[in-house]
Length: 150
Image 1 (cartoon, rainbow, N blue to C red):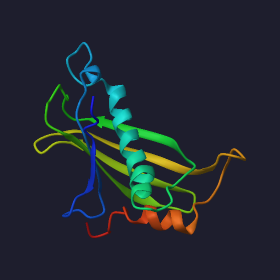
Image 2: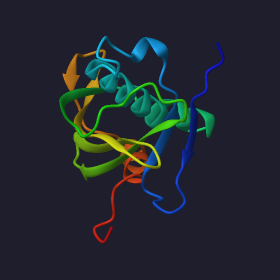
Image 3: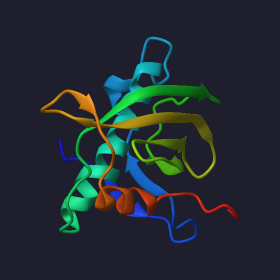
Image 4: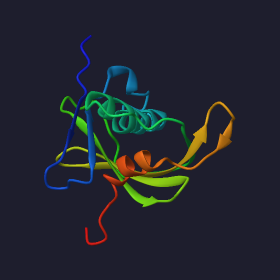
């Protein structure tokens, strides 16, 4: 089956990263809506696009060595087997030397299905220790920082 995910930035909210996808049949549970665990997978797919796939496509170095230290999600309305694309809009709400916070909206044109937040920390895989983000990583992450007046 062809991958129908597309990646783009919204013009009217330049700081938000947008990841579009289609709900798969296997995402639907016995209650006939998307299982809550699948939502975390959607958030992960959006983060991977935002910090790995998109930079690589642009000829930039991806942000490597991040781990999630916290997730929080609020479900707004059930997401069922819709045939139109769903999107995860993601942006940075706080950027520190060794961590940052993301906010997400899982939505389509008519519905907000869930909101979520994650805290990600910089991690050195070789030494298995926390680290600070490099200036290049901070600059890339800062592209998605929500302006104070937005």
